[in-house]
Length: 74
Image 1 (cartoon, rainbow, N blue to C red):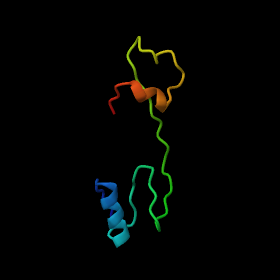
Image 2: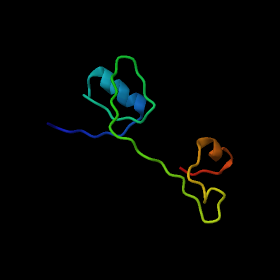
Image 3: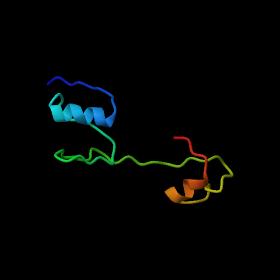
Image 4: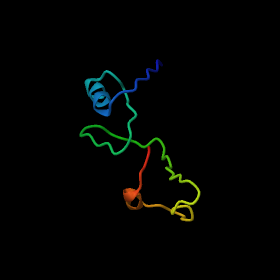
């Protein structure tokens, strides 16, 4: 079975799938497209990493709302 890997924009990959150029695509959520069935492959945890002394340092969890006033680099 030949395996082709291509990195591209979600809309471009979706069009390739609809045309039948590829059998499957891997995309990030959220993804909803009429007529296309999705199945999760894995769940990836995300972490907030801060320097010592930051106000988040002692917290067990940080909500997305709490990040609203922070300068964030992804």
